[in-house]
Image (cartoon, rainbow over all chains, first blue to last red; front, side, top):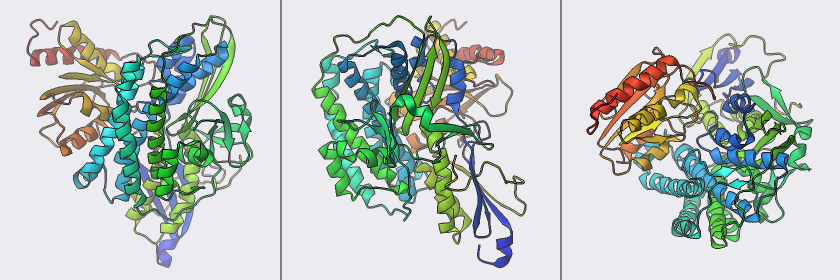
Length: 456
Length: 148
């Protein structure tokens, strides 16, 4: 917007990525002249529907039901569910079962991150419109990504009994555990995937990243000895250090008018960031040497506050996940007690695990018959939602003199940095640009488009 | 190869799985697939011909059946919005074509759904469409003499 007349009119950037799903998920950025007037990210959020579906069901059904919430990260949902229910039932699992769950989760990190890095995020940096264009212009990179993803899928299949919506995980352990040979058969592929991810990280390090350092509060699990996956305290770079059981004392959820999703915020502090960038910054020293070296080789220094560099961090986490899977397989002995059957009892339990996109909170209350009375699920995307909006508040002014198409593309990119699981269609955003003289939402005062730094 | 796509507890989203189940009852081999659609590329590897069955939401009346040949008309990508899938079905088909990983023949049966809520039942119109689609597919493939 360069002339005075234009500055008087409002401009709306509207990104409808889920017009196909429910018709209500979209990004709207409204500009008036050189000012951002409002940012609204609308999210359709399936987990809310599942909370109701879970009520009245037996606790043993929860892993299977929650696995259906997301086709990309079913194991994350299963793992948070089983850990929370085990807390409610007082079950202490065999350490070998815990190692197997970690291995299971590594498979999901590999496949989910590979999908995002190679097919959804890389096209942004390579000047490709989408994955097809990328397949045409950078076929070898796409093929490499698909092969890494397939190796993650394979690990999940061996562990879960099925590739998608795995069925072997149970409250108390696993219905079926793999034999050592089933796991050692994966070793060569995992070594290849680890090396290929290091190679890819070197390539990605050469991408051009926008200069966009932000002052985030990073929130992730932290474990004394491990890069966090399914155990640890919840910590932040601003001093948060709590048990998962205290989650709801420190985090609140707000209904916002423009979205059927609830936005999670830290009490009295506002937005925070979860996911690879948070894990990496808070747990760098827990990464294995091979991953730390790969990070250093591609110039990833601490703290990394540029969300556009999350593509690199995801690759480092693939390196980690492959290496960790190899470590667990090498030490593997089938658990002596793969499944601990627990008598139902009334109780409540919570758990936080690290889904590929960030911390995933589950809380359950069960009655003496083992029936679920209440379920609460807070997925990573609703925790990042406010932070995504704030990134957009700050990013858009940097590009206001650019053509509208470029501003829109930058907005898309900024959203993709978070790998949001918004019904999973976000990588093929449907774009609609509008210029409007009249604000489309009427009076915004007191509305949900909060200014950056707004406190809860 | 016949693949039913969907989510078992997703109301009408289970339509593709229900068609596959019906076909198996009639002795026709059919696979189930749930979740992230990109993985279909690995599933159909080596197959010359694939029939995909999935629920769709395109504004047509519930229970409507649409049959598309991926080798012909350009794929619009608007009809299969199932929320739990990663890349959409059409995007996956297009990517597979670009990477020379699309079977020579891909036919898609789309069953228009109405209720996609978790835990919901399949709508009566969709249940009827499941029977109809299964019959049509059974007729299409060899080796099934009495498809209901």
